Amino acid sequence: MPRTYSGIREQREYTDTYLDLAGSSLQIEQDFKKKCIKNADRTFSQSYQCQELNSISALLSVNDAVLIAHAPQGCVGCITMGADMYRVAQIHRGAEKITSPKILITNLDQSDVIMGGEGKLRESIRLASERYKPKLIFVFTSCASGIIGDDVDAIVREAQPDTEALIVPVHCDGFRSKICASGYDAAFIAISKFVLKGAVPKKEKGLINLFAPMTVSFADQLEIEKLLRRIGLKSNFLPFFSDYDKVLNIPNAEASTSICKVFADEFMKDIEHDFGIPYAHTVMPVGIRNTDKWYRAIAEITGKGDEVEEIIATEHARIQPELDKIKLKLQGKSVFICGGTGRSFAAATLIDDFGMKLLGIETPVYDLDAQDDIAFLNDIHGDYLIDVANMLPFEQVNIVNKLKPDVFIGVPSWSSRFGIPTTHILDPKRPTMGYDGIVWLGNKIAAQIENPGFNKKLSKYARLPYRESWYDEDPFKFIKEVI
Ligand code: SF4
Image (tube, rainbow, N blue to C red; front, side):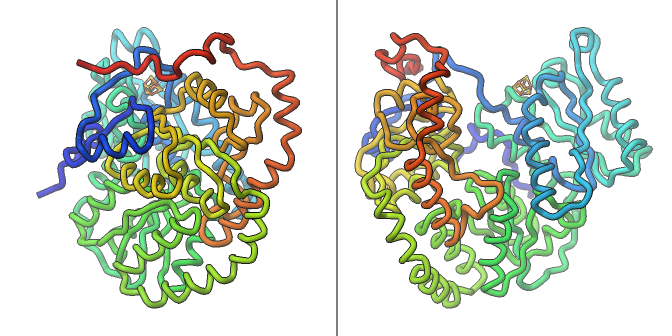
């Protein structure tokens, strides 16, 4: 029997999921436990990241693939950021010739919305095949293709016999889910169904599927691969910078793990179900607690517990003198954190390594996984503010203005204009994960706090687009209970 996960996170049966929620962390933890969080919605919302973007970004750098977005041009606007990251990542990996991702857009327009856009998709598949001779062609759906009812699967079936590449439809119409991580699921469901279906595994002892989204830098890849190598494990790092063969190698692994808790978590269940591969689903290995937890989880399913405990003890002793120095600069500083599910909670545990105090956290989803992290964070930081929001800068600026943290960790575009130090725990060049990552991030946060000059100037000359009166309002006034 195949597993029947729909790919839409809101529909998962085993966990309640909340997207419009805010308040005290202690209260939310209690309410979730008692199952008495009321359903709510926002009566006003700014635009948020859609799942199509995550589907495309997950597969953007698979080397032998061409991507076709069956969509209006605007849907792939954000992919320019992914394309940039891909090019920069090639430089970090020492590539001599830097290439762009191969993306075609069918450019659905008004007339296609009335007459149908199937002809454009057929033509794009033919073009992709002729022009690039890929091994894989991924076809991404969009809101527009879904609303007009283009039968993408039928077109793929029809085109497949005349196309050398394997054509893989990815159903990621943006309106299907408000949880953008559903986009990752759509990409992996497509891989399960079209690439791995019927594969007969040839088990390779010690091979680990190491799933990572494209925000994981080469430095972090090396850091995490090093941790696995130290306990005799070899990584199949994917899908970022992977290729068709690495994807085909997935069923041969001894075990799987992921670097982000919402990336490939459902897919790891699929491949356990289909190929009997056990998996470790834990946390992003950022900060001492998370790195230890991540490392112990993979050790447990591969029988490497003793080796890992020895390494953890050595690593703690090695970095402790550095942590003591960082603590002198950061102890007691207050923090507001905004980030995706994996990184926001990782950052909140990381700051405890430096004795910093959490004032508030903005994260896109509250579910059972989040509850685990929040319970842990409540024990350390006591009560703080939780805002469950997918970006929504209008809420963020209101909260940050009220809380006045010593430092903001997350995408700094808005909060930097208050003149407070801002930083983030992403870094394209240096490790943010594993034990070296802790030291690097601690120094990075300290450097920002010691050098707030840029943001101070910004606060003088760049204004936020909100009226002063907004800052007196309740930031959550648009969250209304749904009766
Ligand atoms: S797929 Fe839908 S939600 Fe996503 S960018 Fe296109 S129109 Fe917007």
